[in-house]
Length: 112
Length: 114
Image 1 (spheres, rainbow over the protein chains, first blue to last red):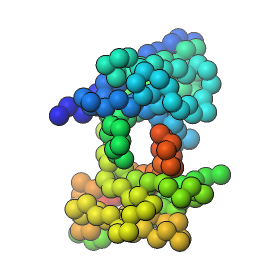
Image 2 (cartoon, rainbow over the protein chains, first blue to last red):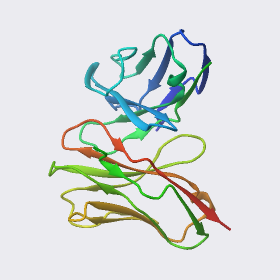
Image 3 (cartoon, chains in turn blue, yellow):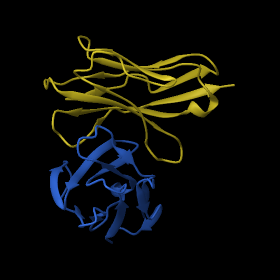
């Protein structure tokens, strides 16, 4: 079966702009979570959605937001981009009752 | 407080040798799960192995095994007969109880030398 698909793979944005990243989970998976990976802070949890509802949120400013659609696809949005938002953004999906999380290949965002 | 600690920033191992990657964790929740992921330079996180806190046996998946010592709060990953393709970053992660998020360690960069 198809894995977790993240688009785009690479993105370059200018400070102050906004960006939207997309994640399509494995078919049948209803939970989607997002992580930010930077060299300095490592992997940090952003938020998790299940059946279009945000169940969990990490310690990030309100500029970071997300949503999930009825087909379980998820988007995350970062507004007013800062240089420090440059990172690899990873999305993971899981199924109810599963312990495993399957990650996508990530979107590498560079803010200049 | 840091919940997952990986004390080895980098490791260099000869091909075909076994390697142990260290991971200690901290939690007061009796129900938790421990994960190991591999991240090659391409960026994707590849699931390797899982250990539940109530599992009686150490988890094994092919060449990967998890040395779970609950009293010491350690969950070391053992890779037997290492291969050049094992060169990557390795992350230990934990999920507590019903929480729907993973907490990751800082990772260990493993390099396999021919």
